[in-house]
Length: 145
Image (tube, rainbow, N blue to C red):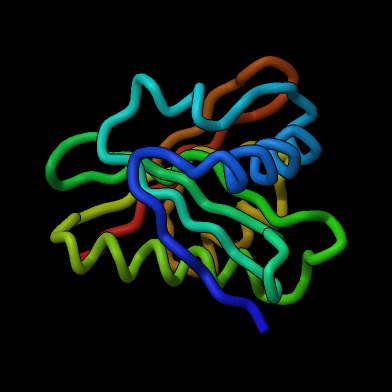
């Protein structure tokens, strides 16, 4: 059974350590997620647990009082294709609507096809594309009203 817990602005040390590990595996980097939060406003961190094990996350922050940016997220590779990313997105959208946000924006890359498809299936609209390093960055937006 998957359950999702929301944290605001920072993570407890255990969650930071586990999420940083998953994040670093997905994005091939070596960084602490809490360190990335320092310059962001009104951060919402959603953590997906399978029993007591962290299997995924979705992190975003406020751009302005009406717009939220869905920034980072992923599901641990052995737990993909079980609807966890969809559960995280549904929870994030529910929280944002309850807080009065009017739209949500995100950016993905052509190489993350499953994320692009998930966004499009959830009524995100492509707003812009541009070359970024060796890939194509794709900006998407969803109206929450």
